[in-house]
Length: 472
Image (cartoon, rainbow, N blue to C red; front, side, top):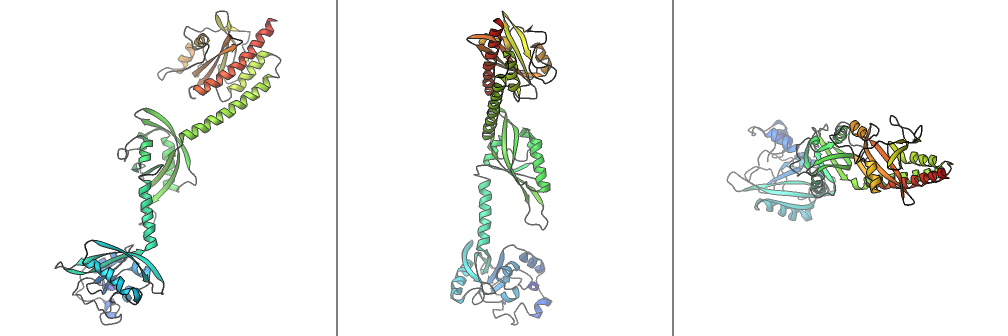
């Protein structure tokens, strides 16, 4: 530890050094004119060492074996207000940087590090030049001379609150990257993970080290474009003001999984440069898939209940029962399916009675010219629904051409998913409803089947009334 005398610090630390224990202004005072001019024989490189010491973030001072201050950097000056010219050469802190009542204890604690192994940590109050007191935390360690004998002590110190803030920041960082109950991923400017905590590793389906350095596209099958766009935006513009919800599909050993992550982003910049240099992005997220799916299901149920209520009111105003049936289906189709077909039982076969247009969206209308036979082959989903008196769901396979799959079943060519619900009234099977979705929509699921059965029960009642009315 050493610094140039041009900055008011000495260049060597040793017991034989003429530290000038007298007050500033004596012949040994580093603030004398001789100091500004430089001292012949000064070791080479002392200016560089002085610059290094003055550039330190921590305050630094040092004492020789007699307790005389030999080093004092700019951070020490900033905290206490005493310049290096005023500090170097004084004997200890007594009377200027420490109250005289505390001076002996402070001196003893600091100088005890000269004979103790390792570093010692202490806290005590120092005096500012303006008379104020500041609580500091010190780390002190002994310095050995060339002969291996104790030569002095160096002491690094900082204000306690600053040290505590630093420790809190480190503790927070370690907690986030270890035990946080949400995912934390640090990505570099190339958008590759550099740190992944345990939660994020589980969410991404890999080990904490196995995920490092891999492109996000290897982990996320769908939604990676939106994720990378968000990360690029943070690097360029800064963190967004509110969390974002991202839907992604992950590739895992068990197959693909659809997840929703509520994500927040922070731009990371180096604190060691005057201009902010981006280090990457901190990405924090929680898996909210269960909650989002529950919200979606609640919204869907609320909408469908509203549609059924409106359909019932409209159907009650229809004089023709079949018009009431088609009106019910028009309300049921909204947000549920793209097409609907009504096939009624006529002897041993099904006949097409009403349907939506095959080539474009439109209302469900009776078949022009009257009912026509539905040319369904053996094993057709509509026939199976009638045989089972239950609901049948089916979809085009991954390798099937959607148009040929639909054409084979006598359905509109854009159909890729189907749900057949049997029409039952007064213990009799009246026919079957077929709801169809295009390939750009998801397949029918169990909740969809329950809704279709509710619609089928109401339509069956209207169809039964129409048949009774026609028979009379």
